[in-house]
Image: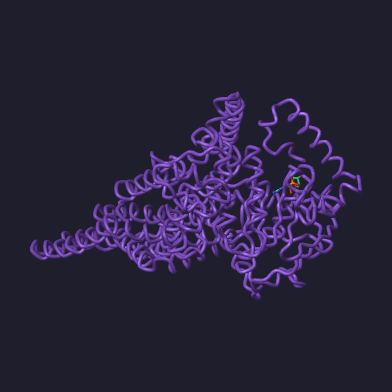
Length: 628
Ligand code: ADP
């Protein structure tokens, strides 16, 4: 049963989306563009309507009038006046089109770009972290972001193309019928060409792009790896390049295979489209006209001229209409991604409103908390408490769930079971921004931004301009990065990375880690979290950093994750996590007395340190034996 459902949903995915949904998506696109740039929508509508009007007017009215006037012996002056007026009107229309293309559209494009990407960025910032880890969602997100402004404008243009095309087609049909009833039948060729073959071709295009998407994503990833500076070192030191080449080759082969899979059908459909849309109608009509004029002698030459001209216009009107209609469905499929993304209902919206959590933390409690990433349970019925003003250490093997626990605490995810309580209340009841403002966190998988050192520490926090520099200096001193930063050409104003500034500074892993740790020092809040803050530091810097963390966070609740158990001894309480739950807890002394996992880990580390300190001179081990 489950399998059948899965198959059905996969089939639906293959087929694309329903027509009604595609149409609604187009209306959604129109509404969206109307809100972002209404004048552009108006201009697109007017220019499309004028385009069709031009075709109809020339063939159904202008040509007929001129030929009739010539036949009935109208004066040359009157004919010239008529042609002059028509020419003036069309000159004005051309001028309007030039203004649109040269001025109105480029300006409107910038407005749309700004308005649409503002919405997309806002959404992207508002969705929960999990969305970035869900490859299906992430695929849709990247497709939605890709040239979204161009696609939105084009969609609206196509909607007008289809709407005015339908009206113009009906008018053309009526005019043709008035002139010659049988000739109307020839219109069927372009109708079949466009409605049947071109639409099938577009669908094929969409299916091909969809099949290629995973390969194209891989190609884009490899391109990125080849130019982004953070990969450059590994590229040179290891042979990962050969692996990348292999992946690239596989992706290119994938693209080629997908192309091959669709080639024959694509060629056939395109050929049929051209034959029906252009060849059959023109050749057919001329044969029909020649027969009526020369053989049955039931059509005059002026009539043939008018009908041929009408057929040309009608064909182009129909091509415009059916192409718009086909595009309309095609765009409907693409707009689906944009719409799915913009209408995605966030599980933990960043702008979640709720009660004010205040500024005091008396306790944070994890009550029977379990959590799974997809199907894999990472935390299992975990119970623990952080009391205000105390110092806690989280220890445990890699993958024990320590960082995940911090992510739950910060509400990047919500527990699958159980609750987290702040001062006795479920944290989901609080305004998310205000709740997160209670925490300062230095994560181990930090990122450097191409901005000044000052901005990399402050990270947009609301600190007054007068205090900013002094606070950053103090934070950098505590984290141990001050001397290094002051030695840079522009001190705090030095830009990190070379991305936008050739004079920008490139810091070592340890130096940058100190800057990240300074972020947690600079933020004025009651709860500080340090996730492996010293993993890239040398022992002297590490010992000093922990002294500073303990000292400067005396007023705060402090939680740190550390593999170096020497840094844990001064914590008020230690939680040892294993298999996603608290296996041992207590202060250092209590845990050593328990003689369990913690004591075992500690003793093993101590032995290593002692072995090193015995091997080296005492001066090389400034802590006098880390565990002493
Ligand atoms: P620790 O911090 O104790 O080393 P983590 O909390 O980072 O452990 O990870 C716990 C487990 O959860 C690991 O097995 C890891 O592979 C898995 N995990 C972590 N993050 C994700 C994620 N975003 N998606 C899926 N699994 C994850």
